[in-house]
Amino acid sequence: MFKYIRRAIMKLILKSAFAFENDSTDLYRKLKEETAGTEAEREFEKLMREEERHRILLDKIVKCPITDCDLDQNLENLSDFKLHDISRIKPIPEELKERVGKEIEEALREEEKTVIFYANLSKISKLKAAKEAFNILADMEARHLLILKKLLSP
Image 1 (tube, rainbow, N blue to C red):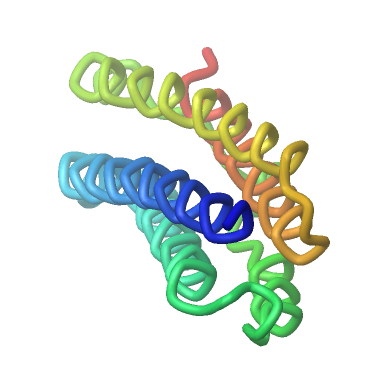
Image 2 (image 1 turned 180 degrees about the horizontal axis):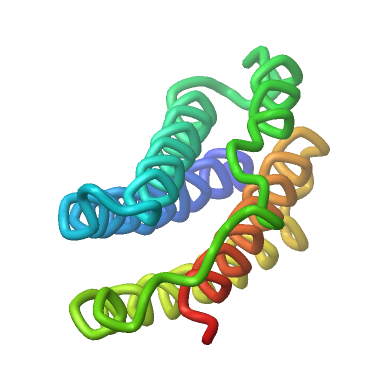
């Protein structure tokens, strides 16, 4: 019975994770459109695609018992999926910051919450594959924070 309850709670938690990822994807899509024709557009496109990959992994965790899923391959693919060379990212121009700075700051706040959320899920997860998945997701969201901060830097 406890196993069933634990599984039900995990599914509810993962649905919350989907909400984080969906909100982030939507926000990055909006920022991509608002920065069309600039260097920042590419970065928001990459962030949007990474969030979509996070949803795919979460979907695999939700749809099947985690011990039966082929998560090892998915985790390997996800951890290797690094679209950003942070050293090459340039701060966005001031006039663009005036237009989209508030949305980028909103994205920063959401990413901070998501890093904490995944890190906490990793701490409480009993299954090694789930723990590893949440660690990878937390690390990737932390990279998103660095990217957003670099875009906003003076």
